[in-house]
Image 1 (tube, rainbow, N blue to C red):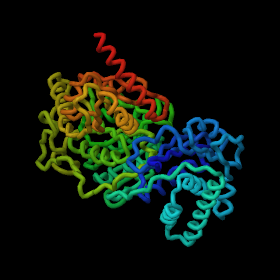
Image 2: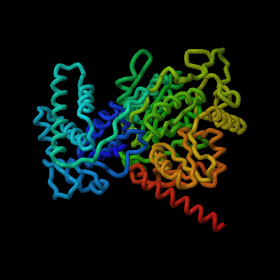
Image 3: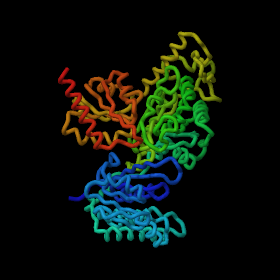
Image 4: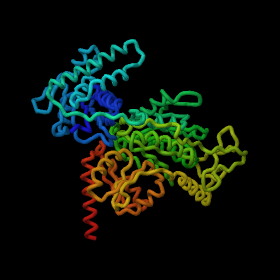
Length: 570
């Protein structure tokens, strides 16, 4: 029987080509019709330090990076020592024989990565040597790889052909080394080209593309892992008349800058991570109070403080939903896949324009750096919204009534003060109790305009359901697919966390138990659900790494069994 799935981990030090190898394998596979997903984890220094990346290639949609490895590529001895135990029975370890040697363990073979690359005349081709070896192990045709190399290095330069030939030679050398090793993992099932155009893209790139598609005008940001690539992408691509991108000196400057842009009528966005988001708290309170449309992307990492700058976590939910002092509840959209990152970005800008206030798009490191093939978005089908703009005369009551009112733009009619102090309908400061009640209710009532988010559900008749959020979606979905025929369990998921779609919340309140897999210590999403009348319990992990599917399956089974036993004793 042919293999339907291939999981490869590349491990070594930063700068050895670990990330390049993983992404190259994913690109080669998706170009011929396979599905692929990568995962990367690395230390916070620029070069060096233990780094590993993982690529999963499959004939069907990939939901997680995979648990056990078919192949480990070890660039140094530390990588071998740390990761060899993750190789499944029957798997293979390919190691760099220039760096170290190991005793024959019946599952490993070495080859000189760099020496083989140098023999091609291209010292940077070591990753192609590795990819060639992996391709042989699963009988992937050489023409797949040659097509990938030709497309990748055809860039209109005078030496393109020389680069292409050297990389193809490197692929062949790696293939020969694997052939001589005597190892083989069987044949990977043939790829089938999807019926729609596909692109291989990372989560942060998808957020950028979605924002541009939604009409983003103004972006300023401060570099911080793992959000820096959003700023870099915008600097190169958000160009043209009326577009503005700038790198500022702090996150405080970033939030105040986009508030100014939003007040001036522009669609404005910034991206940061937990430490930077903390600095934006007061500015977000001003945006909520003065009703100014902006989007802040929080690419979560391990915390608190400096925490784990290059690891993944889902521990900013409390901070994002209630970032400012006083009564504040900010809208939150939290995509769980790379494809959702694109549409979440579109929707975040739409929400900000619709309800006239700050919206938080919550991503996380594991999605930001993940490369995944997705259907190419059809821009003609996007619904792009813009705020209601006041067209009347001066004397306008900007904050009159219980809901959204048309927003004056400076230089146009209806001038007003965008006041961070409590204010009356025209925007003047007031300390009257009845005005504070009126304006507080107005601000919260506007959230009712955002309850149009959609959600996924399956086996909704079951009394116990799983409901992950964000990047825990994929491993949870894979675990659910494994368990749904064995246990009485249902599935719910949405990326629209605040406010939740009305019908979704009503259904969740009817369940005996809602299990929430999430990457934090406190069980933040289940705590918020309980505050809304849902009997929710979290399955938590706070290692800086995503869930393993096998671990989730075991924990879900244990929770369901414990719940059943408690119910029987009651």
